[in-house]
Image (cartoon, rainbow, N blue to C red; front, side):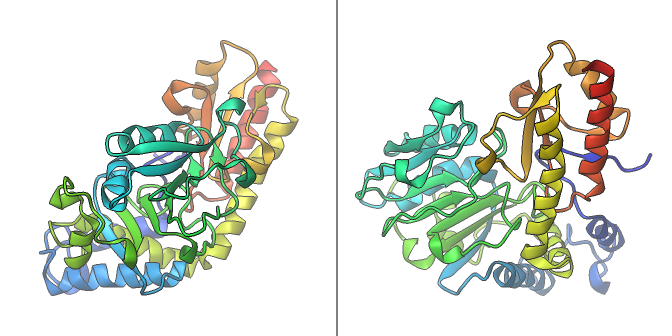
Length: 359
């Protein structure tokens, strides 16, 4: 069977060059006589892999030595607890900017440890926009300010970096990290699960400023303490070795593909193809405010009821898969770094065909 165009919100599509490299190296990595899946995480071979992966990530994002890079597990969901456990210190309040599904999940976990101040929310628009900075009501006593840079469920993306004064800014960049340049120096902490733009499921990247280490609450389990992981070089326990290896290959592919500027242009082109069609369609629509539309996760609905199952079958017959929306609501086309431009082209062609049949 030919490869399909995979619009899954995660795990997402991988570069074919990376898949080919993995297939080649699985039995015998660089003449070691064993697979990466078999080698000791403390041995020289794997140490060279994790060190190069960190070096490439620092190079691509311009991460200074004032920040530690941690290779962890547990996904964004575990970070929802690790962030307050590690950053609250002596403070008892944290600011959250609410843009929908994933912020709600993060706030629910944070409320176990502190008072959550909803500094801004787009609930009044049905989470179809990003609250403008002048609407934010920040607490100067807050331990940090948390926001989701791109919500995969609502299709809302911040196309600007918030300013929070001296309060550390925390960003969940799980779905848009490495999709465009970003100034890491504006952030206290960035976290991102890998299975969208960085590789495969099982790895979570945390980029944390040095001065934020050592603030963990006394109740913090050792496995959830950033400082301990930083001191041990992400080796406090066995790290997700194969996922780190794949992330390293993806980073090499990204550098060879033109870097973050090229990814930014790629996402602008891919998302414009789909949004231009949606805005002119009589059958499909996207409800997100144009200035805040995600370039990565594009939700849409059908104006006419009763066509959902027909639409999914129509798309799958054409090799366009995983277009179901969040929690079964509507549809969503997720297009991460490795999605070829032919993907959204084929998507629009098939949607236009479906519209002629049912519009």
